[in-house]
Length: 381
Image 1: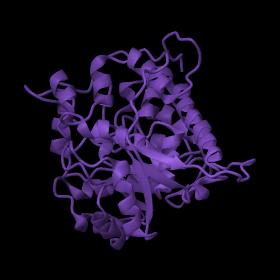
Image 2: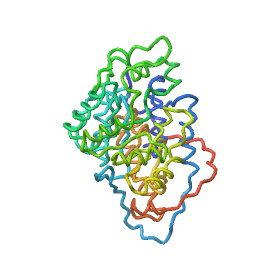
Image 3: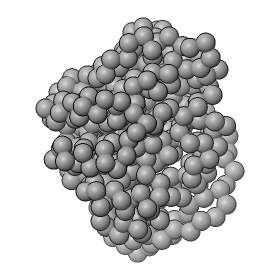
Image 4: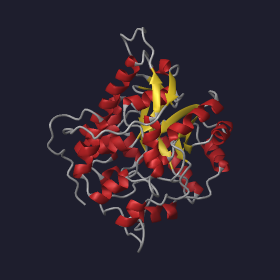
């Protein structure tokens, strides 16, 4: 499956992430676009993630000195130029030949952490060699020793944190992939675990990628597994996929350093609460016991400010980085992070905040989500 990484002709450079999204959609094969963009079931939660953020309004402060605005933050114990990390996403080589190497370079240049997926199409060792801050996302495998071996590889490669995904006992029923009988093309493989033919050969009905994950992932991941992982590694440990205060508190009690409030971008349980709606209760329950990050639906610097105002220390950004990679390779991914940096600084200053810490003191109110206007035509990335 050949993908043209050159952006389509346009009126000018991308000015927002919606411009990058349109550029990516224009160059990707339909089944690859559906794999990236789609959610599970009727995609209720996928759409609700965006609506929840749109319902959240900020109360900016005035007469504050914002002549100097800093976007710097600390995430999982380390410094970051922005209060965001690149989220783990599988198989970047689906959209560009350089795959994760290009996105990791873009993240390094932007000064933000890059999270390597267990299902990366480039080995973790090669990605970590790019430099910068690299986290490793772990799926718990059917053979726990194999999962712990991946942790050892990540440590040896120089990764600085482990992010355990806890909401995927198996892949959610993603109807776009089922209808497309989606399977990986021959040139794209999981570089960290052997997929064999399962991820490439669709079953008579369904998705090959879903069939492979059901075969490879453990549905017996429990708190005892988290405790075993905590005992195995000294790296900061985050649990990704937490939506309730009860689970967040249990995570803190188990020695976890951070929780990522996430519904997997609307790709797991359809009908699950939007991540932004779950965030405030998790923050209140934890009361500083461990760090809290937000994932799912972040599409602008204002969204990042919303998350900070609700008590998150930062966010994970996934699909937009892949849009940039698809549209223009490393430069496209870099443009996405550049846009977010510009928008975060702009949002902080206009809200009367001279830095990320000040944003936590902003108040928010909830209203009706405004109708989404038709997008203005965008240009090339």
